[in-house]
Image (cartoon, rainbow, N blue to C red; front, side):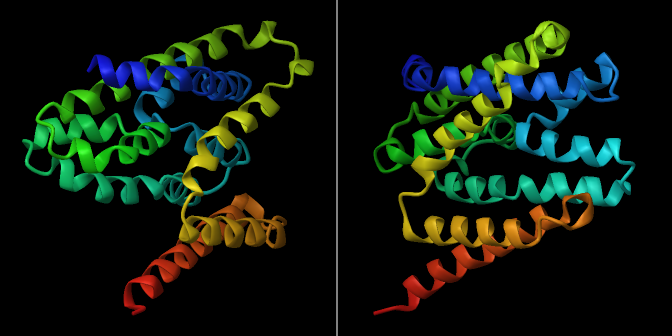
Length: 224
């Protein structure tokens, strides 16, 4: 567990920055403080929260809002499938706990050592340590953003800091060709379809990127 905490520590500034941006965005929306805190604890997904907020404020249909959040979080289905060989032997309650603590950076860091960790009986505690640190930092920074939003000047460029934090997450995930193709396709679709209402262009871009990445992986599997 200490090893997991230690390995995740260098990523703490990026996690805190993105969480702070999310907290400020929720504070400046029409949500009450209780609703914002509840959304942060239940959703626990900054990208999905930021995707859902403008749709909620625009009065979009509930189905569109929920679908947007689900599509943005589809990557966690892929994460879970990749992590399953390491944790499928655990009881359901423990798997649910670890599932709740899955994060982008936690997944990337764990998979870097997955081959070695799979044979380590303490791997569950290693993953839990990483997930716990992300959980604590995320919610503390989110609360800071919620309560301090009115005191943070808009010229501080928090949106830019959040974008840099996302880049810190994205770059390590582009090490394989399928991820590179998927990201390129998603970026192209998002530009072409950016004028669609209710951020539907983002949904279409994500789906196109996922399909492209899966097609590359499948082609690689069948190639001699």
